[in-house]
Length: 92
Image 1 (cartoon, rainbow, N blue to C red):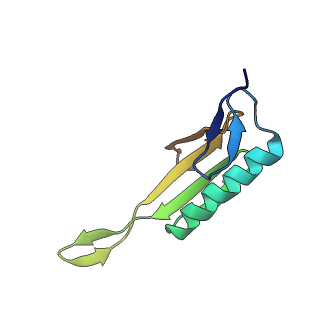
Image 2: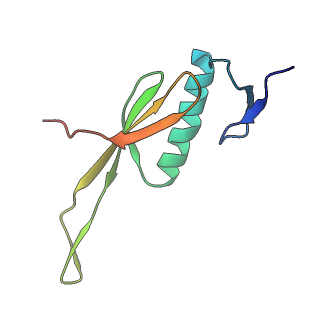
């Protein structure tokens, strides 16, 4: 019996138990980062399978925009194509 095919969030079919190649993981990360940039995030750093993204936050003070706080996230793509997003530590 053949292994079931799974469809990832980017529409690519793959076998359930086969690990993704590094090139496939790079492509998945690139498409994920493209979506993040469209949402207003900026790429702060990147490796083949991980990236740290930053979005500027704005605080309102009596209806006026005052300073901002940044939000950092680290994205990782594992060998099964799962995307993990977690808060990133701010650089010191």
